[in-house]
Image (cartoon, rainbow, N blue to C red; front, side, top):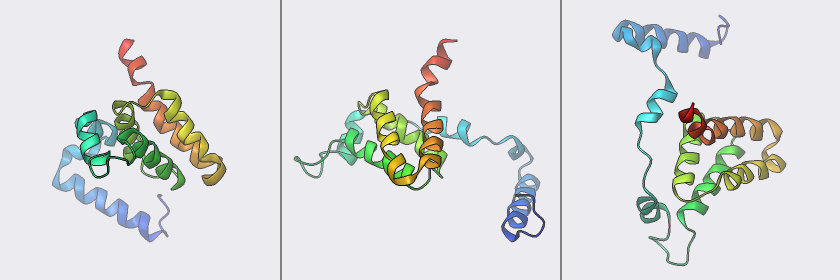
Length: 135
């Protein structure tokens, strides 16, 4: 990204310098720290918003979130923040670690191993958070 001939890299470097000039404290910004400030919705809230609130015979929130996780993996797991947040929400909606892992692993046949591996790395950060809290 430091290639001087890459216009996108130059634009990003310029934007970062401008952000530092406006707010000197942004040099230590962490997207992961920021996403922890975003609350995880309760299961009832997710059911109302994403689950059977629209159609009583429709998909529940857990299934919808596992499908969203599969979709994010299919896109190449490009949005790590959204992927981690979707895992958190899926777990809150009742998904097990095995279900999360299986939803991502299933996408290896369609999105390829690199996308699946990247998604699994981000998901594992969330799945192992409770282990980190114990140490």
